[in-house]
Length: 130
Image (cartoon, rainbow, N blue to C red; front, side):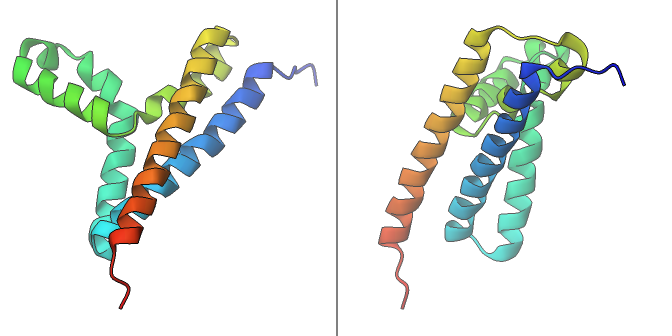
């Protein structure tokens, strides 16, 4: 058929799994702290914001409003930035990415996942299961 397999495709698939793991850990943490309905709502909001935070920060409205920019920086620091793991556009349009970006995104995802796992264990140990 004339197609080719790009190595970026394998990175993309692995980052999709890493993003799924990260979302699963976020949902697990929120489910320990809230009821079922709030868990679903918070998880959806975190997923949507995590994908759109960078584009929102680049908008002119946010750049002209320092308070909003500061709030988005806090969000960006505390909650997961799923856009870093989203390589689908690069597979379609760019066909390549620097290895430094891929390695930094991989380290970010694994470190954030490990931190969430530690936090989940700490919350679960404090939770009364009676």
